[in-house]
Image (cartoon, rainbow, N blue to C red; front, side):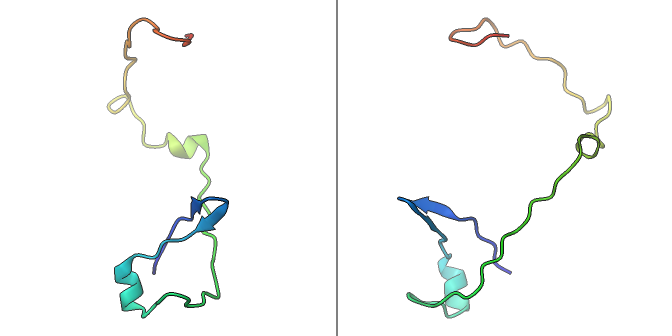
Length: 73
């Protein structure tokens, strides 16, 4: 299975195929691709994301100093 993320080249979307994959699948310039399937990202609830959190692995607050630009906190 080969997974690829589209990139941008000018106003176009492109997919770069690694040479090793192209060699193993005998893919050459001007080879027609018939099917591109979009991979769906998993959606998680806040509870699922925080499921592994405990007091043992919870990070404390860190002081970063005074603001030096347009930060406001």
